[in-house]
Image 1: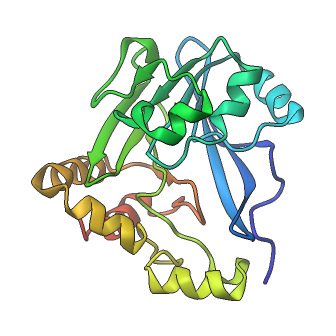
Image 2: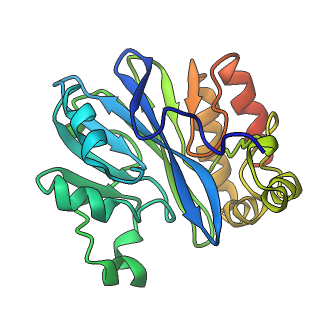
Length: 241
């Protein structure tokens, strides 16, 4: 097993004009998993944090050198737990979530304040810099964000492309079995079933993602699509389109 994530960790790394990633480590069920936050700059110079990873003072400081943090996004029904840390330190930002997340028992119990639901489309608060595409299945939903200037598509778990050699043996085998292993990773089997149950509406939303033909595709786990991104995305979402 090599490095479980993509160092340097907890520090912004430039991807494109107005786009950065912050790779980190997530501890779950006794294992370490690679996880990623994406940072997008809006046209007014403010920042949007997509699927925030663990908060550290150094991470916050490095981001604030890039611009003020104005928006923090929970882009699917699973990636919200670190938002409570960020809300403690950046209380004046607007906190967004996929529709329905605010009603979940664990979210209510956490005390997390969620200000707005992510739209299916754009929002005036984003100054024309972003489009949101909602893909909704059975008990699961995810919003893909498209950063227009850089033509970067930001997903969460709709594509998982973990490199087996970076994981402990049981997780490496699991990633292969559920279809989430690089270089042909896709959403894990349980998520594919749930999204499939979304029927024609979910399929149409997935086709909208593919039709964007993004220059790069960033997601929360594993090796993101940098070269030939549009074709890799088409292949990864072919099960739903």
